[in-house]
Length: 268
Image (cartoon, rainbow, N blue to C red; front, side, top):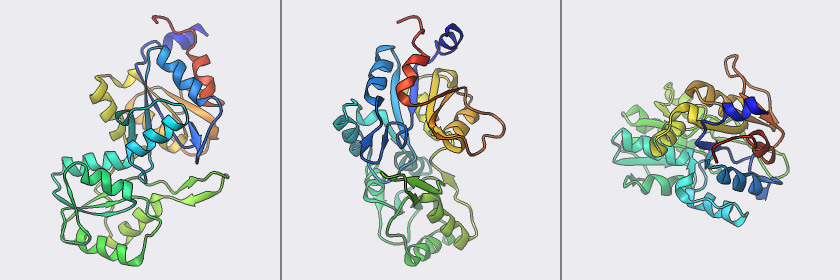
């Protein structure tokens, strides 16, 4: 419709969630490749943003490319990369990293020494399938000694290929917070707006020029509301969760329907 098209005419960047929006596990969601291609034709810059802290941006870029979705490394944002930016911002020189190899690589990639145990300047907690009592103890020792506590995200769970849910980063962060009696000093991922601040700085755009596309009310949409950006809820996700009374600007069945929403957009 004309009103929707004109409302979206200011958009320059689309920050698109990955899990359950572009793919489920190793399987691309039907029409995602064509939708991204069409958005590029409309003059938008797609940026892919995920709370996952397991893979590097390069690994995700390669995964998207293999699905027929061109994506450069710098068009991918992960909570691991945002966590690395936080470590840099707090002046950390050494970090104990509880998480996957991809998280360790992102932290090391900014020139921070990833150390196996304290002493350290920063403790970074991400998704870790080998999480253990010993790791809680290690984080506890470091944080009680003054290390800055950076969490990748508070996601309770994440979906696998077959729809089964798996424990996310949130339970690991909660364990360390409970043990230390101290909430994380910084949380990198959604619904915090750090990812959007990076997008705004990189592309020199204002909040109203960024469209957030995702399936999570309490992550993607809540982040959009907090930043003052328009949003699209992919209804294949869930309407559960809260955004303090504010909902998505638009709703579509799948990413494949997004170009139809903006089809009337003028100026291209």
